[in-house]
Amino acid sequence: MELTGKMWIFFNVKSQVKTDPMPAAKAYDYLHRIDPQDHKFYLGWTPGWKQWLTCKEILKNYTHLFIIPPSTQGLDMENTKSSLTGTGSEHTYTEIQLNQIQPLEDEFRPELVNWEKTPALPTLKKESDQRKYKRFPHRIEIVIMTKQGKSFRSSSANISLGGVLLREPVPADILKEAMDVVIVNPFPDNTTPSHLLMKGQVVGDIKDKRRLMFYDLSDEVQKKLFNILDKYKTNYQAYKSKKVA
Image (cartoon, rainbow, N blue to C red; front, side, top):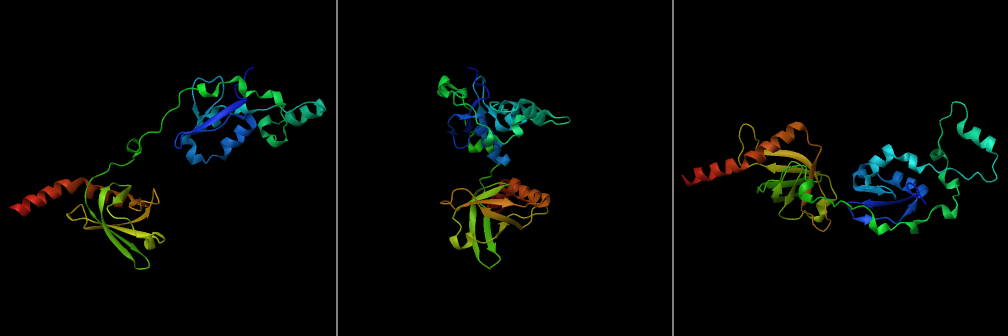
């Protein structure tokens, strides 16, 4: 029996979780429940395909595989035909309420497929491969302030244009409030200010409150931060040489 489009499984690359086989109606609903922002993490496969495809590609090019003809038993075929293909109508079966369609029990036979021998699954890239911004191993003073007047001072274990890993965790009483983050530049010059203010929030593992993400950065602030990080090593070496001399 040809099962292409009749049975589906999906795979979350991020969590490495594979679904159980599901019929087309359930698969169609599953696809539309995925947040569009997470489409890049989901792959789908149906018997007959040689490889997994992203859910974005499935929704774009293969929705015709989810067309499930309703049972015609006991229906007035002329009336049914006219209701589906009346003059000027472009309705398809996928536009019918899927929960009103009752497919025959023997229409789906997942036992005909060895679901363990699906095409090879891709692995999630390492975090280092996914990083959008280069990380610098600079030790730079970081000051966190809140509108309620609370403050916290630490330094960076590493830092990028996207965020910073602090050497000490942010105190719990500050986590609940909006944060202003101040980068303290020890080597200011005409292109790198002594202090740079931005917004930040703690992200990642809730048990590790050292990782901050920067957000709402203007192009100007990003450029200034990049100059600070890019010139830090050169300026530090010049500072050491001057101090020794």
